[in-house]
Image 1 (cartoon, protein in one colour):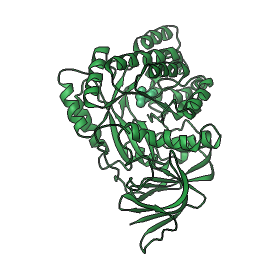
Image 2 (cartoon, helix red, strand yellow):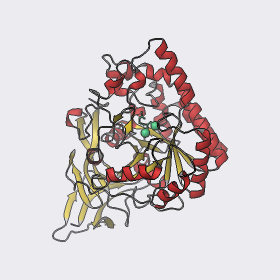
Image 3 (cartoon, protein in one colour):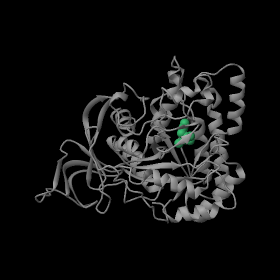
Image 4 (cartoon, helix red, strand yellow):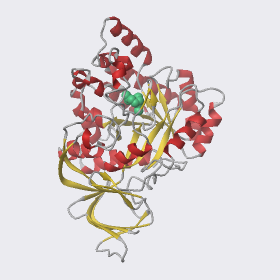
Length: 461
Ligand code: URP
Ligand code: ZN
Ligand code: ZN
């Protein structure tokens, strides 16, 4: 059914104006004033509301076997949660273990998503080992529409690779023209600090931070960017959390390294004191790199507004508190790492960023949607509102007032790290390729309609 969105204030990364948007099939076909709808069209009155491009989460873990557990969401629940919160496209991390072949891992992630995902999706392809059979497999995966790799400096034995593997991965990325995303923490330092802390009987969640202080992350960023500089290939730092790491990334940028930076909604709004919450509740806030001192929050907000940081993701990694996080009750190194946020990222970023005056509304659109589309080869199909783009839109009500509660969430995990946070504004109607997929916090779309986005090769926008 054709769709007409009337009288909304259309906001992109660069423009702001009131107009009507006409969509036929899956695409925006006309933008203008006083458009009228033929009989049978669905009409949405967006008067007094913003109309944003569908938001893009550049970093999620929906299917994630990790640290002895499986993340709680599947592609059905996780992508419904995304849509409810205004996210219409996700980049999930395809993370095969070191004992798995990349192609087999890619097929596994595709099979998990296909027919179940409700929003659109692509993957960053995890390069979790590099041997003689790796290059041809990665070439095939790139040929099938994956334009980004993911590497881990941490998690040795699970996903982490050594420097020789990393250099080979970066060289291949350069040859294929794909961007390499990276989890940057120095594994040797982490292992030494963990051993020291556990030997001192420091086993509670709060000690997770002490095992991964800011210098551990900064060293990882410096290290990764030094290799990228020599390999002369574009890179992207995932989940950057603190000033020390940001300084390393900016230094590299000044030397000419083509590096993009992502931070997370969790680092902007949560701080390390939460991991000290008694009765093991602190485990809900254990992720890597860890939540930082509150002072880092303003630094990250300023870096967003000054466009030093390119994207805000979630790193959605949902592990139940009652069972899975409890695996680390007597040893913080066994707490599955991760904080879920896929459902709340957009509303929180608007509330505590735009409404609170920390970032302007165009920066908001850029860091939560447009920049990811540009960096990862989806623009202008995704990430903007223009004729020819997919009809992914968020009619956003800035007058909404509410509070976050796990009891009302769509994600399958049993807690919400932002429990009790007030919201000033929310995604009220969300369209995916011309169909209404969510309304007022409820998924009303077609189950399994999400599509794998084969990304075109070539220059990034
Ligand atoms: O703690 C985190 N970030 N968990 C998910 C895996 C990763 O490192 O991205
Ligand atoms: Zn990571
Ligand atoms: Zn991650």
